[in-house]
View 1: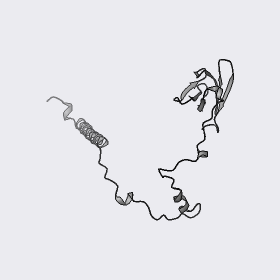
View 2 (view 1 turned 180 degrees about the vertical axis):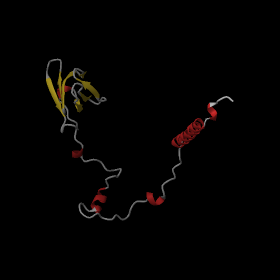
View 3 (view 1 turned 180 degrees about the horizontal axis):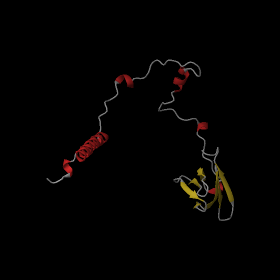
View 4 (view 1 turned 30 degrees about the vertical axis):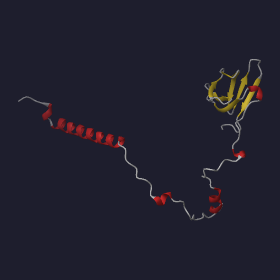
Length: 158
């Protein structure tokens, strides 16, 4: 009689284990990619809340509800939206959006007028201004006439 690996008990056990793993993998892959229909929310969830239990301490809940913070008609107060820091008018509307300082590869994110913000490294030019130096919260620019301008974020990191 000739020996065959298919008759060895260890080989058969390993084969059974491999088949079981393949079946479980296929089952979990099927469940991972199938889409389930989500039932609509019950009407009781969509109805506005008529009574809110006040929380002890702090501002009364009635005053907070009266503010309607999630109302579609609500707009931000003028003082709540600070304008981005800009250089003087001579810079042509160059704005500093942010800075990242990391040893040798520091960069500044700047916007010229209403154009998309760009990432500038030291030596890059935008609108006739060459980025000379990047520091946390500030960037120094130089134009062709060697006029030096510094943009700052207020406060640094925003």
